[in-house]
Length: 165
Picture (cartoon, rainbow, N blue to C red):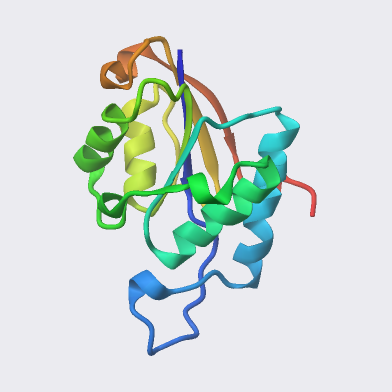
């Protein structure tokens, strides 16, 4: 069994005209929502084997704040440059190449691709993921290379406004 958590990065700031898109930081709401979602996962007793993030500042900051709440070592967050400008086939490829030793993986990425990817692999349709939302899909297989909608089971969808402050 493989468990994939897909997370859209938390809310970012548009207040810095001199920064590139990749350099945009989280805003106040994003800095509050990312750990909130980490606590929500911790309440479900979720333990990650691997946390993979886009290199964008807003995504990596989301991953770091979430990791802290899950007691996942910050220095073990893997950055995958391909996630930043990924299209759905890229995310499929990235996930299918995950190490099979990792059974529970959380991937932090960007819309619209993260929502589109969730809809490609999940047997349950999803609306656009709001910022900091998390989708959990479980796959009845022993290797990430085998993940497919046909062996997928939608487990949960959660987002910050669904959590206490």
